Length: 155
Image: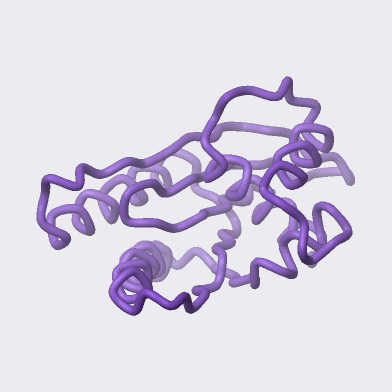
């Protein structure tokens, strides 16, 4: 079973593709979808939508998992994040791929065992679970992989 984990964002969206079979988790792919702050938000969202569709076509995941929206003090940032989540969810819906949403606390609890874990702790545990050498990837990648791992624990 292939699971696509997504850590949504307008500037950087992390993704991770995991294969889960026979109680074994294998890393298939991961990366970042980046958009340029020089472009208008509608162009950035369209680019994100297209890149998510490329991933869905390439991997044909059985499930997708995304981090729930969190509400910060900056309402403009929250609105833009919500728009990014909307175009990602639209892509999943068009392709008829079930998507699941998890809170940041649930993801951290599932991977680290502590709902208040730091990004460094999540990175370390994801690297350990997937037998990755710790690289200088952005936290968005490790968060996306953590989201996919969290979903596997819910299956």
